[in-house]
Amino acid sequence: MTTTRSVGILATRSVRTIRRLPSAFFPALAMPIFNMVVFAGTFFAITQIPNFPTDRSINWYMPLGIMMGAAFGGVGLGFTTIRDIETGFYDRLRMSPTSRLSLILGPLTGTLIRVLLMTTLVIVIGIVLGARFTGGLLGVLCLYISALGIATTGAGWGLGLAFKFKDMRGAAIMQLSIFLVMFLSSAQVPLEVMSGWLHTVARINPATNILRLARVGLVNESSADYLSWNAIWGGLVAVVVMSVLCLGFALRNLQKLSD
Amino acid sequence: MRHKPADTARQFAALSRRSTLAIFRQPAIIAPSLIFPLFFAALGSSSFSRAISLPGFPQVDSYLQFTLAGTVTQGVLFGSVTGAAALATDIEEGFFDRLLAAPTSRTSILFGRLAGSSVFGGLQALIFLLALLPFGVTVQAGVLGYVSIVLAGFLTAFGVGALMSVVALKTGSAEAVQGTFPILFILLFLSSAFFPRETMSGAYRRIADFNPISYMVEGQRSLSIDGASLTAMTQTLVIPTGIAVLTTMLALRQLSVRLAAR
Image 1 (cartoon, rainbow over the protein chains, first blue to last red):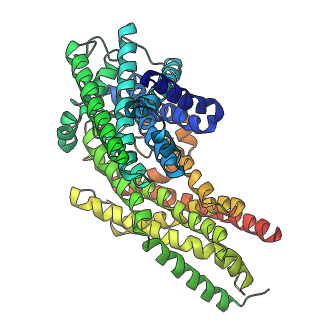
Image 2: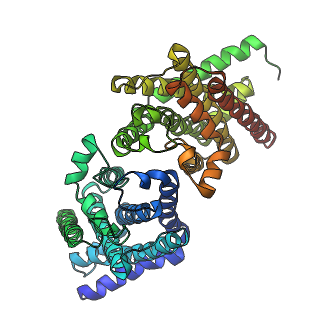
Image 3: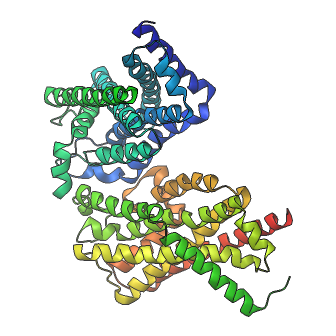
């Protein structure tokens, strides 16, 4: 069986679970919407801080909701894989005449389709709640690229840990690490507004660059980040490097699993 | 079966001791409810240090001072699920039935379980107060304020634990109890635990205005920032007491339903 065909079959299997088990997909949709609403509502006044890059809190926190949803959607693939390993289904997959690469790319494609659905829904609800894309279609595109990028990173990390630990110990590490990476960044406020230790950590955290990319089309036109090439290329590099590293980590551990 | 008050007290003490020890013997379960609120407090102090000058914020030296009450409430709310989950585990594993078969007072079974999480709630409040002390976060109301906040932690844990016990007694499933955790999370966020209500707007503000957690947190915040006052003391202690009374009635009712169904 060719790699492309295997990828298609495994991706279809992943997407079919949305229809067969909607209750499992529901939290993946509800969580980003909830995060967007509560952060934008609680920190409504944050945009009044001088030099805050937008005057709408929903513009700042909609990308955060999407990024959190995409990242956890990505590591969710790790949970599914752990379950498949524990039930023995993964052994059957590994014994089938498919390439090792397709065992990663297939479920990853399914996950990215789910993240696309989630991102679209959150954007629609965000717009209903008052979010405005100041950067037009390019801004929307940047938000989608960031979401897919962070989902790929999360999926690679989740798969790598699932292959390494083969049980639910890996799940706890997946959740905690993604949680820390997301929050120790410019998730809540921009770098210029934060102070102290968090500023130091967030400045070197690649998630900050990915969030910057996600927000380039949502900040005010007067902001330095507004559709700026500086913010876009920094985010793209972070997305590519993180995705390659995490998918490499997954492939390496899959090969070890086979050994 | 009628129980002498002395017997009931003895049984309650024994079951309370068991539930308290059980909590402290499982550090992996209680650690997140101690670590995460402190993590969020540290995160907030760096993220929102400039927000304290916004209109609507009380006069505080730091965001950490503002968020002390929110940190205490967050930790206590999250930790209070532990006792109810343990009660559900007792039902799942049959220990609850063995207690019923023994000449044990029925209410002691429930209150014994709640005592463990309540003690833990009070201790959590004390830990948060002490952990933030080196960062200049003090309670202006002095000893009275410290005691009131610790007591509020105890009462809140009791009240929320009783509410969660309703789920435990109804379903007999620890998973179902853990599944209610997001409701607490939502209630906490839809309050003034992290930012003042005065800075919120629209429907979100109105929800926070209706949420009793807002007033409970604001009472503790007032003790911490402004000092002792009758309003602050009332909000700090009377609201969790009211919640505890109401949820205890619900839990006792659910206990009767469960016993009647046997």
